[in-house]
Image 1 (cartoon, rainbow, N blue to C red):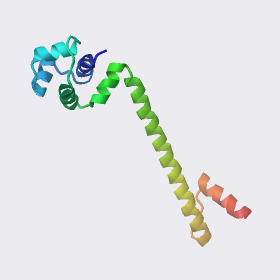
Image 2 (image 1 turned 90 degrees about the vertical axis):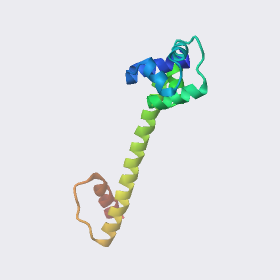
Image 3 (image 1 turned 60 degrees about the vertical axis):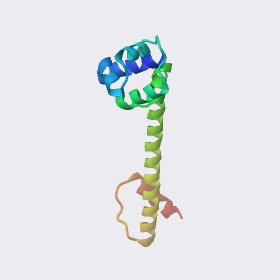
Image 4 (image 1 turned 30 degrees about the vertical axis):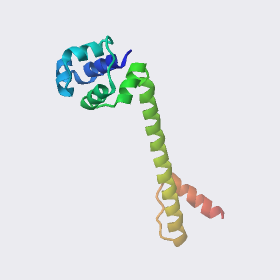
Amino acid sequence: MSIGEAVRFFRKANTGLSMNALARAIGIDPGDLSRQETGVRRMNCDTLEKAAKFLGTTPSHLYAVAEGSEKRWLEVILNVTEISMRLGIMFNQAEKLELTEELLDMGQVELPSDNIVSAVIQRKTKS
């Protein structure tokens, strides 16, 4: 798929915007946009940037659509998001463990039924 075809696909699938409306919004002739979207004529970088911005996306995302790699691109984003969430949970648990250990050392903690606290208690009672 050409980059122009990707713009057309994205325009129709995600915005429902007409070709004429997009052409007016980015300041080019509707006939030129039609030829670019159908792959008859190549889309230049300036037109691509304007179209991407107006459609609420990026040129690189449109290239991913053109290459058929949009699915891979979305999978990468989901994987990064999942990893970030897991790391956030791990850091949160580590901070909780550290705080609980400090409070136990000072004798200022009530013991809730929590796995992390239980692990600290077991570790402290063994030492």
